[in-house]
Length: 226
Image 1: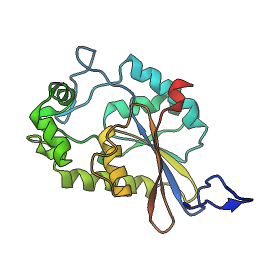
Image 2: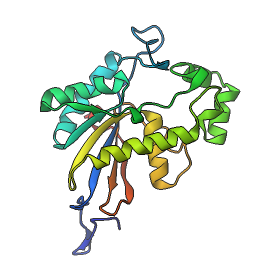
Image 3: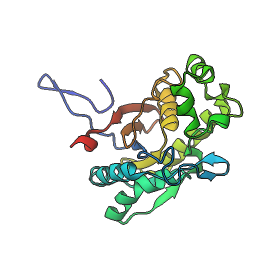
Image 4: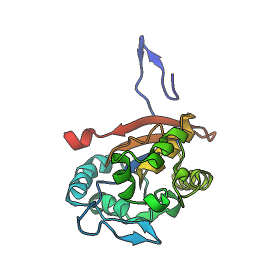
């Protein structure tokens, strides 16, 4: 049984967050502009920084009521616009503001950054095959090193958890590779085991009072089909 579980009358009691723990909801941004959609080729500091497309904005609107019901203590976004735009409908509902955590920005994929990676993946590129064979993004020329990425996103998650009061929850709007890396660290899995995280999905992690991390849920998209 996990923390907070107990057997009551032969049945397992529903999970309850321990009073000294913090809960972090890792929300992947909505679908961003691709191909010839407006803004798809925009950059920030040399990295791909497209806005949400119409579908992504719709996903953000469906996320908002579910996230608002949580009563989160804090809201965080990365320094890339698609996370801030995904958070906007929630912030309009709650009147809160979001704190930018640059360490939680997406992995930089060098010569394949942005939509180039998916184009090459669809074409069966040997470089992309090497990414999954070696479980490392930095087999791509000029990509961010695995060590740098691992260190900075963990630092970002710790910063979010440290800013969250004990017994409370915070929401962090982030990116697919960021979620995959953090969950791999927390669970001890293969580096890219969680890379299938979907747009506008929610994954939940908990840090106990002793500092131990656990994965509570992954890739929850119930709000998109409700």
